[in-house]
Image 1 (cartoon, rainbow, N blue to C red):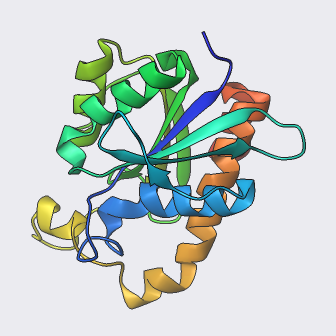
Image 2 (cartoon, rainbow, N blue to C red):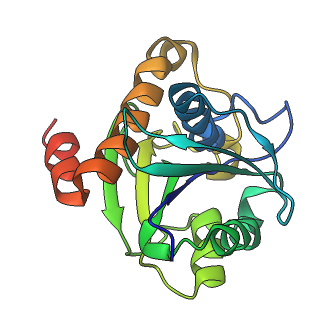
Length: 193
């Protein structure tokens, strides 16, 4: 099996979703692609685009992936790309939006529940295991009585947009630290902040 890492950014396709809270994972992948000098290209065997490269000087090889389908059917493309590159679930990192964490906060974990996140649920189903890594970018809870589905599909607020570059950069750094130094080191850094 490969020693490469598969980094997945969850989101929905199309310009109408590009700047929404639900697409924070794909925004982070765009940042990582700039760092590794990779360009996203259509994958030959999956409904996805991928970019490859190394994190840092001589760092680990990474395959960056964004599904071309909707978030709730991410599992098929993610498992197809993982299989194509010979990457096991213990070398998969999924970057996604997280309602249960305040905006501008990063948390990391391996395994555990999906917290009602349909993209994660579909990936777990496709892999047959929950034992993959998650970098959770906090988007906070909906205000008042706003429906959760409406909230995640809305663009970030004017105030949030000002801090969004920092959230994206921190999440990209969290991915790098997780891959290079391990989960515990990354958790100690981001969870103590």
